Length: 547
Ligand code: N01
Image 1 (cartoon, rainbow, N blue to C red):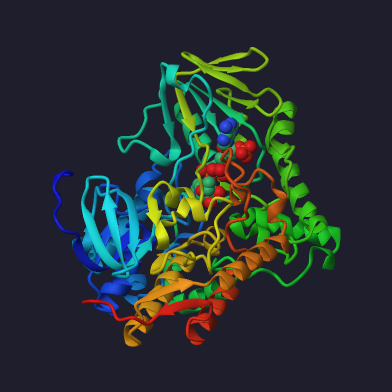
Image 2 (image 1 turned 60 degrees about the vertical axis):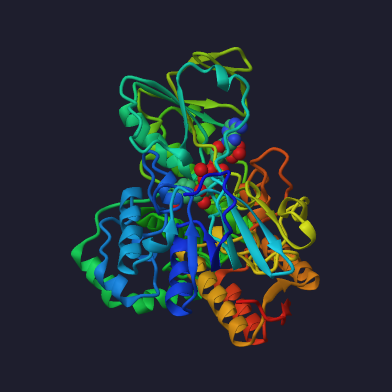
């Protein structure tokens, strides 16, 4: 790696991809192996895996079922890879991604330990110059961000953290060597999907766990288990059908959303359906009726069912009340699934602190003090406090487009994009699972594959037709922003006012509903139409590019 002070000319590529997670790996394969482009992937971490490189907290596993949380583009991969459990744990996902990278010989074009500091678009050359923190520069016609939606850790600014004498960790930047909780008093802040996964595992190891809950949350059992040989064989034989289902549904999961309304059945039938769904477990709980995620009264039936389950599981009535007094509709925030989360509060060594009723005053050298004056002594503090989602990973880089416009300026009032794939003012920048795409509302590999393939198709089209630049028009951006808003408004998603979908978890962040809630299948159709109509909504610059 060159010295930061050297001024060697930028290394020349057709495309630079930032990030070597699910998205970056597949984008490299599409561009290099199918189009023959010269591509370099720049990755900040010392290994591939993206979110799964960083998220190694106790209990970290995927909430999508393993047989669907994988690439679907290669029959060989489906044939040769075997998942061990219903929900894959983080090391198994890293093994899978390394297996894919080795199978397609991807690593030779991935530069690890290379954090991108910024990128700027040179209008004269119609090329991006990409700068790394180490001072290297790269020049490419196309810049593709595969930076993930949940990769910028959010450590809340609670006064006193700098004085804490114990150890503290954010779940999204977990030490590779693990954390020894034995004999320690642990405080965990946050009860989102991550906190709900982590708490039972930490509680089983620590002397004491205090969970600091600001917003009570729903959760449905995951019922994780080893996969049987019969199930594995069925998946391999029937993967084409599974893929068809994933491509036809709203969320890209391998299950369909039922046609029936909550109100098409009697209360007794509904209860029986919810009971069966609870026994089955997983994210498909919300798919039992078509209107759970769109109609408040329908949603209330699912919400009440889960709240009753929480009250039945948690033995201490006061704790059960704190856990089940939930202020938002079910699935209006990303619904967690768990392995014995509510049961964890029946353990002698676990306490719940309701920090909405009695907020954190400050972190002290020896623990946490609440506003009531109550002191909770702690040796370890775990922040399961989520991420500066969707925009955070972009805005921590200094990206400037046409006329020196920075992305921070373009998104000052919240992110705007066309299809979540390009931002006006930033020609030839493609944003895989960017704000305005269905991304986080889906089983992620499905939108990732679709985006990477669409981008490759777009670049192939540009090359065939001598097009040097592509950039969203203002009109298309405006109408896509309206579409993103309308899609969200048609659901209950905006009803959760503290949700990270809205940017509400990061103080000062503009409140804009970021993902496209119209469904993956509809989105795919729109993207296909846009391409078929000669990239409708994009301005195509026809000047030829110097080789
Ligand atoms: O983060 P979150 P996450 N003081 O933002 C609380 C994906 N994921 O890491 O709700 C006190 O959901 C905050 O409280 P509140 C998945 O998409 C996937 O859990 O803002 N508390 C909340 O309880 C998920 O949605 C998987 O009031 C504070 C929690 O911290 C996304 O990642 C597994 C606080 C943050 O919840 C993010 O989930 C895990 C403060 N200052 C996650 N600030 C798999 O599929 C925040 N909180 C594997």
